[in-house]
Image (cartoon, rainbow, N blue to C red):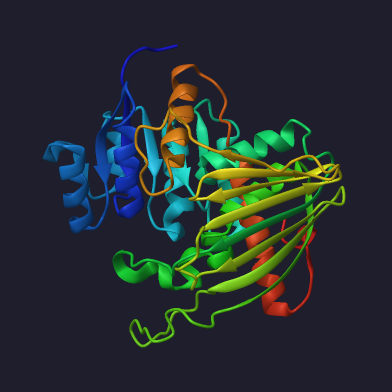
Length: 355
């Protein structure tokens, strides 16, 4: 166990990279000591926020990894760069947290997961929705047995369209892996975590009906889905449903989750931040406001990124295994790929077809 300050590098300093810088620097004993990004504007903004000198700012991630300035890195570059950069990070031996999605293809996600398996470093998958306080409480209630045997999981994500990114890379499936990988890997991860079981079949319906249709980049119109229903069947019989709409900015909550078992139902609401538990036996409905006093930086995700970083930090300091693994990231990507294939081919897709 070390009590020294843990030095972090951030690879990719766009919106999410800056979010990670702010979260890291809010933790006692953690400090961002280097950054890298090929875009000068992103580097300049992040350099000012991190308070770094020019000798700690790099245009290439390889220079950062070779600098000797970091003990751990956070990967927050565009999705399509993740796999190749992770090859270099894993080879360097530093601890790392990789932003979702792990990769944009099953093959790349499998490759980096296998490469990391023999690493002595903490290899952490960035799936911070597990840490949103109401969702974490929902998971806790399910684990306690309050709902009984889990039969149904329903996740609703009704939100705003994709934001603008440097170079508009997030407007195209070839760069992102597709909406059901880029965005929805979070929800497939939650489904599998809650079901505590193996996904075996995916059936989806979705389209791009509203968003980005009036945009053009080098003569090409974006192809990112903006709405979908996705059903995931698990081996033990649990069924999970994702209801995604990305033209629902006026929604009271961005995420609403419901887990129903043979004894009770538990629901979580974000950002209203409460959990509701209803029982089949007629007991009074419980409505529980949720807060987490550990959060000192709310950021863009209701404090979940901060809580994720706390656990990553403690895993490094105490030489513990990651609580969120690359295998978790791999499976969340694979379910998203299966969902896209289901939409494209108009049929249920067995997970064995994509794994």
